Image (tube, rainbow over all chains, first blue to last red; front, side, top):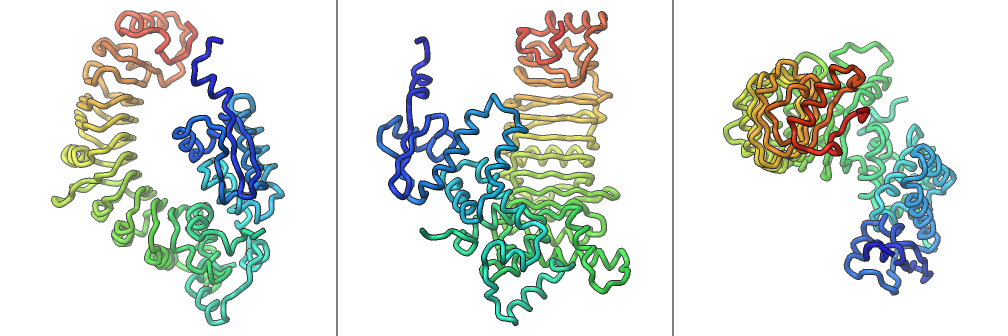
Length: 163
Length: 312
């Protein structure tokens, strides 16, 4: 095999990740490289059999992150941009708020910028053009203003509440 | 398992990543959702007063009667004053897409944001050319500056430079020779400079120890002398008064330019890469022959490094 040493390592190295609830996930090196955090970590340790602990990420969320990264690694040169975009949209279409928020936190920690972007854009789209009452419903938030406080907020930002 | 909902979501992250993507009006309106978020809009990292913003505030029914243009402008100034004054840190990008009617307010606004560590300022003037406000020179933390349709004023004597400025984009900006030279000299980290349709001295001298990429678009200049040891690429498009013999560049620079300029390249000996900005009709024999002559005989580089239509 006339491959360069580091390419061989890249092909054979499997990265192990451990979720908060002690579940082990094994991913290809290229997939792990989508995360700047993992990239830096692996630069220090090299390819190791020890699982990298991700203390704040549950297995459910980690699985979704891996799903995203695996698709994007494979899609990199083979699938059209338009189709990748469609896949992304399908991924987030019916995602609940809880998952979205947890994914953002995880993606931010792992420094997977495209994923952070996608998640934030999705939430921003869900906020856009909604009334305050609708927003409270969507995000399961109670109105915890006193009447006087609410009046002050609305007065200060009167121009934004028109319509 | 603990739920991560809006109430538990880190405020900073929400403001900088999510609210920032919303139109300003909506980001501010979010403040009425609950107590936790009532000041979220004061931590926006990106303030964009776009055309949409001005439209959105002018459709707010105040008294349901026709308001004069002046009143509308005053209302806009009030709102923008409030938004900027209430920002309490973290502002990185400031964009103003319309300057007409705000000439006297821009001074204030730039001064206010200068103390917040703003990194990127983008001012677009859609009316008659305005003089740049002196307050711009107070924004010393800038890494990126973009101006459209302004007249650059003299650099204030106490100005130490935009010491972090990396990117500068000037379109329809009038600059004197002294001001241009001073800005280049004082911006020691400047890497990318674009001058588009600007009024500049016709014998352009560019002296910068840090400049890596230069773009000159639609300028009425006769000559260019670039004393920039780090220059890697230069783009010269539609500078129709420019004579080829009057271009003096450092060696080993990637040049992209119009074909009519390209065909006379005889003084540039060792450019590494060359690109043509237009679609040239290489099927015309005359054109092809000129091209081949220039490229293969006059310039010392391999055919692979030629980036253009590969029909020959």
